Length: 67
Image 1 (cartoon, rainbow, N blue to C red):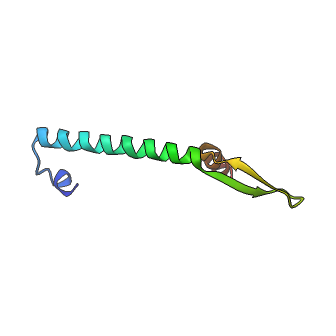
Image 2 (cartoon, rainbow, N blue to C red):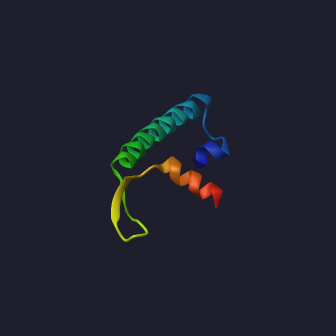
Image 3 (cartoon, rainbow, N blue to C red):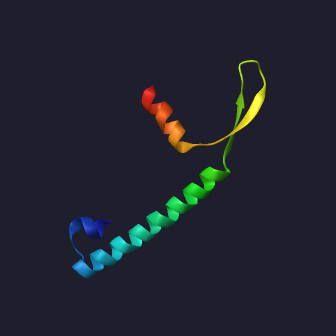
Protein backbone atom coordinates (compact mmCIF):
# COMPACT_ATOMS: atom_id res chain seq x y z
CA UNK A 1 0.00 0.00 0.00
CA UNK A 2 2.82 2.35 0.87
CA UNK A 3 4.35 1.93 -2.58
CA UNK A 4 1.03 2.81 -4.19
CA UNK A 5 0.61 5.89 -2.03
CA UNK A 6 4.13 7.11 -2.78
CA UNK A 7 3.74 6.50 -6.51
CA UNK A 8 6.81 4.27 -6.60
CA UNK A 9 5.24 1.70 -8.92
CA UNK A 10 4.89 1.67 -12.67
CA UNK A 11 1.45 1.63 -14.21
CA UNK A 12 1.73 -2.12 -14.88
CA UNK A 13 2.79 -2.82 -11.28
CA UNK A 14 -0.02 -0.64 -9.97
CA UNK A 15 -2.60 -2.46 -12.08
CA UNK A 16 -1.24 -5.84 -10.98
CA UNK A 17 -1.55 -4.86 -7.32
CA UNK A 18 -5.04 -3.52 -7.95
CA UNK A 19 -6.08 -6.81 -9.54
CA UNK A 20 -4.70 -8.73 -6.55
CA UNK A 21 -6.65 -6.45 -4.23
CA UNK A 22 -9.88 -6.99 -6.15
CA UNK A 23 -9.38 -10.78 -6.05
CA UNK A 24 -8.78 -10.63 -2.29
CA UNK A 25 -11.87 -8.46 -1.81
CA UNK A 26 -14.00 -10.86 -3.85
CA UNK A 27 -12.75 -13.87 -1.91
CA UNK A 28 -13.36 -12.17 1.44
CA UNK A 29 -16.84 -11.10 0.36
CA UNK A 30 -17.74 -14.67 -0.64
CA UNK A 31 -16.49 -15.98 2.72
CA UNK A 32 -18.52 -13.34 4.55
CA UNK A 33 -21.69 -14.15 2.62
CA UNK A 34 -21.22 -17.87 3.25
CA UNK A 35 -20.67 -17.26 6.95
CA UNK A 36 -23.70 -14.99 7.26
CA UNK A 37 -25.86 -17.79 5.90
CA UNK A 38 -24.62 -20.07 8.68
CA UNK A 39 -25.15 -17.66 11.56
CA UNK A 40 -28.37 -17.96 13.50
CA UNK A 41 -29.48 -15.82 16.37
CA UNK A 42 -31.01 -17.17 19.54
CA UNK A 43 -33.63 -14.67 20.64
CA UNK A 44 -36.01 -14.44 23.53
CA UNK A 45 -39.62 -13.35 23.18
CA UNK A 46 -41.23 -11.09 25.75
CA UNK A 47 -43.01 -14.09 27.29
CA UNK A 48 -39.63 -15.71 27.94
CA UNK A 49 -39.77 -18.24 25.11
CA UNK A 50 -36.66 -18.60 23.01
CA UNK A 51 -36.58 -18.97 19.25
CA UNK A 52 -33.99 -19.12 16.49
CA UNK A 53 -33.86 -16.63 13.65
CA UNK A 54 -31.51 -16.54 10.69
CA UNK A 55 -29.00 -13.68 10.83
CA UNK A 56 -29.65 -11.00 8.22
CA UNK A 57 -26.95 -8.36 7.88
CA UNK A 58 -29.15 -6.06 5.80
CA UNK A 59 -31.90 -6.20 8.43
CA UNK A 60 -29.27 -5.34 11.07
CA UNK A 61 -28.10 -2.34 9.02
CA UNK A 62 -31.70 -1.16 8.59
CA UNK A 63 -32.26 -1.30 12.37
CA UNK A 64 -29.02 0.58 13.03
CA UNK A 65 -29.98 3.32 10.54
CA UNK A 66 -33.30 3.96 12.23
CA UNK A 67 -31.75 4.48 15.68
